[in-house]
Image (cartoon, rainbow, N blue to C red):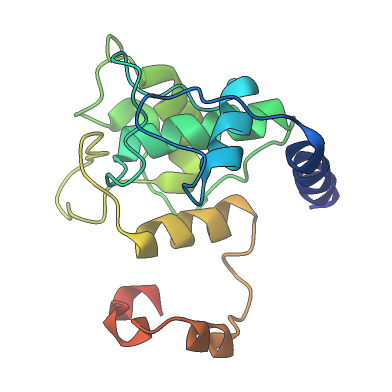
Amino acid sequence: MKKIKVFLGILLAVAFFMPVCNAFTDMDSNHWAYKTVNLMTEKGILSGFTDGSFRPDNYISREQFATILSKTVEYANIELPINTENSWNFKDCIDVDNSRWSYEYIQKAFNVMGKSEGKNNGCYFEPDALMSREEVAKIMVNAKGLGKEEPDYSLLNKFSDKQAIGSNYE
């Protein structure tokens, strides 16, 4: 936990003082995530698409998120917690072939991400499935090792769409 706080502090300090260049063709300096995206690109955590775009307003796929999560913890030298509630493991996951571009990153993030929320039968990671904000938040809580903590639901009052949160995320 201390490593995460130190890493975030360093990341914010560097982001504040570092000059930013436009790494992507579809992000201008007025975009709310511009500085952070460029900083994470310089650190090798983000890479965008082969056409030079970042597509900041697109949804993120499970394999893209697994890649970002894996690269972030690797950069910060943090070990992801093991999800002992999974009764199956990555090698059983039938929809992720070892020739897939994201295979290595999915393997590293698998214990935190687990199988797709959309599949109940068998083992499916669903690398191309798009993620909801709820799923991203749940995975981030698990990645920080806070999955067993009692949540502070008052924090949800900041969000106008809090009533749209699925019951499986409460």
